[in-house]
Image (cartoon, rainbow over all chains, first blue to last red; front, side):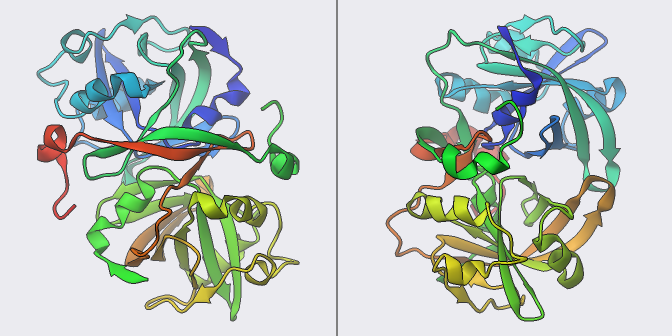
Length: 180
Length: 180
């Protein structure tokens, strides 16, 4: 994993992929699968929606830290399985053969098998709506990886895989943030 | 456009596509292009992030209504162009040859050229974070349409088009909401 310029980190969430979110509470790592997130700012700042129904919720409230890991299609079956069991009775890293790597600025682990990882700090918790506001503080990318296609949940148990890319950079140039 | 069961409407936003959001202020229709949205609940409830930098912001605050239209790849160039000009000096429906259709429960128009349209009411405005909370009240889908691939912004002026679909329904069955 190499460091990714922090002003490019929003690009990992902007397309709306399914992500894995790791937490660490008293040294106990956990992972949840989530699609309910959005970019809030290029800085980058993200919103994540989760509540007490998720085992990771308590760790997120308590530690105010997490890592957003971006999985690709080659591990999509694992991503779905991670989302269908609970950290309350499962060590998901162990069960699914995922490798926790030490992050730089937060205690939550990176996931080695993911294409990219974003270390985040919780800066606000809008309890009324179950929204966590996150500041990304450090980002990592595995540039050696051939498979970079992410997956997008359709909500009915099916997932759309990234297809081809269209380039509208010329059209959008005046609107693009610096450094991307 | 045929009615889409409201409990399936979240499926249109869950994959994180670029969307068009229409508003109508004193009979003046406008459109903005946006990627900063997320599903908040299956009911369905959505979050949309926009602020005073967007001309549609005032109409959204004032009318508390909008339509989220889901464009597909065949009109992606138009979608990008809609996002690079302002409703302050442009009639975007006219300029880009888009057709406003009368919605059922809100004054903001549907967009005929889009694959689907979701009529929404603003139920909360978290000013501190520029987040609008929306309840979807009616949804429409053009089932006769062959092109259904949506686009996902990468943030650098490039866009990923939907590729193939993977089916994990069996794995996810206990986690799926009713009726999808």
